[in-house]
Image (cartoon, rainbow, N blue to C red; front, top):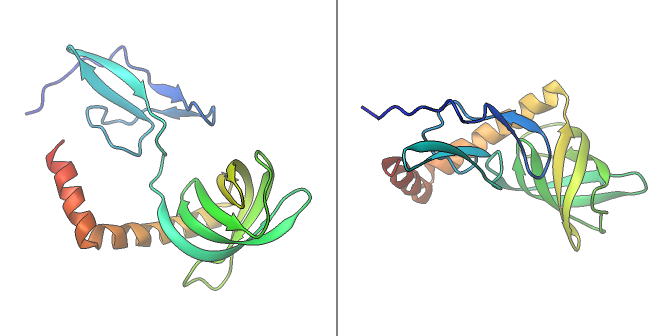
Amino acid sequence: MAPRYDLAGCPKEFVHPRTSRTAPCPPNVGYRITWWLCTITLHHGDAMAQFSHKRTYKRFPFHAPLIIGGESHICEGMLRNLSMDGCSIVCDREVALGSKVRVNLLLPDQSSSLPIELGRVTWVQGRECGVEFIQLALHARLRLNRTLRTALIQFLNAPKNRELLEQTVSGL
């Protein structure tokens, strides 16, 4: 049986250092999972909160066409990777850092595009940029969730990833 720790001094929620959004700390604070933002570690018997700069959600590689539009531009691009709260893309022109954009993703095996009503460009390197999803309609979020669930199953079924997962779980 795992030892019990007094976590009364731990924060119930935290402010993400990059997005300034408030989110609850994970319920099973005794474990360290790499894509969680708030982790709890034990240091000399005391629980203390650590803040991580890791992503909230796992990003999966995707290669699909997209259309991105901003205040003064519209361009085509290619999706590089995708998660529930953002994506990395390559455009046919540079996009301004911090600009608000609307993105339409043409995901594989879907008849219509997936509309991201509002996103924010969080980083730019030449014609490559990262977009944080700020506003998604419920039906778009559900479609995105189904797509990423399929990607997660494929990721976990890959032999090299299965071995890595087993090593990670056995180390907890």
